[in-house]
Image (cartoon, rainbow, N blue to C red):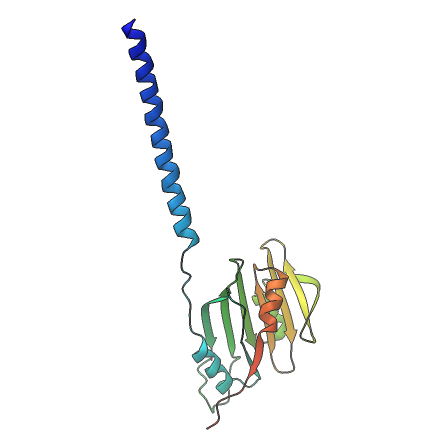
Length: 188
């Protein structure tokens, strides 16, 4: 009789050990997921690039102002072709500013006086026309690259091309486009 009770106790002990191990694994996984959810996205200050662009660009420059909470600037790249303030540019001047959106997607604003068709194809990842978006009284061309799931909004101004693009939804891209404000060079 005593051997049957011992077997039952050892079986229950085994189950308890396995359940404890599973609980520890699940708890550890929950901590990792929570820590990742609260990851801090590194933010960049793009003020210097926006100011430099307004000083050297032969076109009206733009920069986002007043984006809603949750938009984090993650990258800023100004390509001046070696142009300094007061000099006449010899190459197209281009600025690309990347963001993490509140929906944890990527969106970027790019502006350049490069050949508009080439610039749109490059920045918009060869997206196909996909309708239009009306943003603050301006009509932006929608483009979509289905293979990459990338969307773009394109505004062709007289002297430059503005492109808002990324894996974000059109609504998020429209939010970024609506935040773009003309920048004036500083007064001397």
